[in-house]
Image (cartoon, rainbow, N blue to C red; front, top):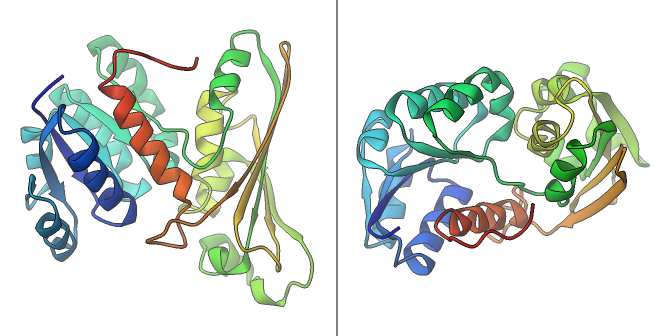
Length: 270
C-alpha cells in the first residue's frame, strides 16, 4: 500500500504523535497527511512541523481526500464519524473507544461493506487473549483502574458526587458499575474499559472499578477474565506521555502499532 493519504481528526497529543510517527516511519505507505482540529491553530502548528501535512477546515474534507482516517478527538463525535466512514466507504481508526458504545449498531453495516473499523488496545494488555477466550465463552470480565487524584479531579462523576479527590488518605473505590455506566461517569478517563467490553463479553457484563490512590503517580489497569478456556490476568502500570501527562504513553504507541500493522501483510497475534 503505497502513496496513501492519512486523515487525522484531532491535533492534540495523540494526533500529533501519530502524525509525526507516520511521516517518519511509514514513508513507503503514506505520502500525505491531512489534519483537522476544531481549534485550527493546533492543526496549523502541527502542519508546520510536518512537511507532508496539510490542513482542512472541516471534517467532510478529511473523508473526501483521505484513504484512512484516525479519530483522536472526543467520544462525542465517534458515532457520526463511523456513520460517515460507512457512507463514504473509508476505513477508520477510533482512539476515543468509549464513543463506540453508541455506535455498535453500525458495525454490521461496516462488515457488509468491507470497511475496517480499527480499535487499538490502548493502555491495557491482553486484548488478543481475551478475543481468543471469547470464542469458548467468557463468564467474568472485570477491570480495576487505579489513578492518582489529579487525573480524575474534573471528571463528571467526581464533580456530581462532590468527591474531594485530594482529601482521600488511602486507596478508595469511588465507582463500581458496568462499562456503559463507567463511560458516562468518566467519558475521557475509562476508554480502556470500553475496548475490554467490545473485545470481551459486552459493555453490560464488563464490570468496572475505579480507585483513587493518593500516592499513585501513574495509571494502573488490572484486568481479570474468567472463561471456559481459563483465567487471564494482566496489569499495566503506564508511563505518562512525554507531551501530555494526562495521556498514557502506551495509548499513543498502541495507535502507532495499529497503523503500522494496517499497512503490513504480516499479522502477529490473534
